[in-house]
Image: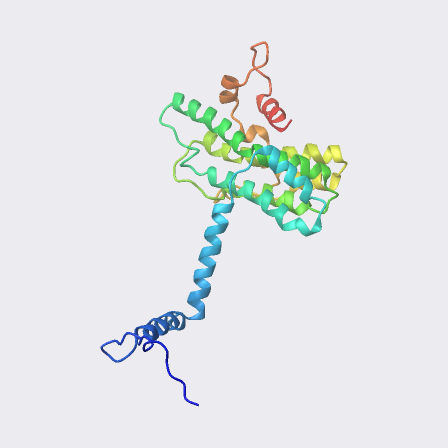
Length: 261
């Protein structure tokens, strides 16, 4: 039995001057775009997108939020990467902000040097605030599982002075070790309260460091993070006095104790 079409003729695809149809050209265009990219190009593009997403995801968090996240991740082996990132990102932030562009190490006059010293000291202390609280809570509540994580953070802060600046004032350049001093002090106090003598011993003896190209032997934090080697008495007397207005006999220790408390 023959059938008869009840409607008009079906629409014909638009014909291109070369003889190909529009629909076919579009389909081939789409497929050729994918085929022309190699696997390396596709993978590189994917990596760039992931890295961009990661950069937007790393935003500063408040001290209280950071401590809560640390306490949740600390006892959970599954969240060890989250714990590592939490501490490492704060150490990275301090290192990045310790550059000479943000924390000058040169001044053209005595008054300018005093002002830079005061501003930098407060800046280093503010930059270190979240990390110090993470270290204090982490060391105190940890059972020794994450000792390397706490020690790694201090080591990164110590390495800030591995780069020799071209021109500097010694009192301003030495101040770059203030975050490392505060972190070591915090770990030491928390270790004593926790009864963790092994970590205390490590905090005072490692890492070894000496100023680049000085020819001096490498020594432990108990020596190169001595408050008197980092905090200039003259600058401290100006900005940090006793309650009765008198000068402290040992102002560096007074300041470090207050900051790590």
